[in-house]
Amino acid sequence: MAENGDQLGIVAVADALKMAEEQNVDLVEIAPLAVPPVCKLMDYGKFRYREQKKAHEAKLKQKQIQVKEIKFRPGTDDGDYKIKVGKLVQFLEEGDKAKVTLRFRGREMAHQEFGVRLLERVKKDLEPVAIIEQFPRLEGRQMVMVLAPKKKVVPVKAKKPAADKGPKPPKEAKPPKEEKKEEAKPAAAG
Image 1 (cartoon, one colour):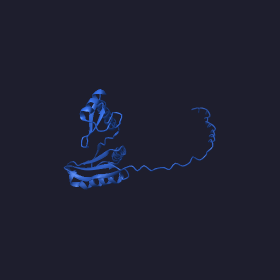
Image 2 (cartoon, rainbow, N blue to C red):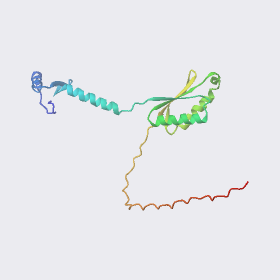
Image 3 (spheres, rainbow, N blue to C red):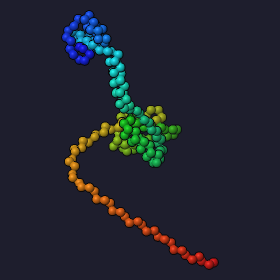
Image 4 (cartoon, helix red, strand yellow):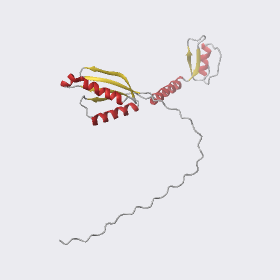
């Protein structure tokens, strides 16, 4: 096979090497298992360079999924809870996974039901944007739950023919507000 893609037919190896040397290119074996093996005349250095460039471009375009972590405590108040859930929603909408860690300290281990209730609340609040990838489980003194973003279903909108709307009428200008002037009051003699 020539560099431009033309078929040269079945050629002896010595002749193929001679043709490659004359054109100042390399003889590259493309399909070694074919009978007879398929070879191509090409500049192998340029070929490798182009392949590396393609791989680099593909790598730049792909999104790296990261696992972001938010830590809760069984006694997390409402304000902090709302902020943390908001952050979780933000992470999930960006396409990252989220790890929710609930840490118990001291006597809190005796009342794990408070932590379970908190994780159930997180699960319920994030139901529209996340799926539970790993259900809450106790690992030492902490409970861990992993959430993944739901696949976004992009609705396909049918293009409607544009209705012929004339130019928009100009907005009416509002009259300026009249300022109330305070009347000067005579000073009281005291």
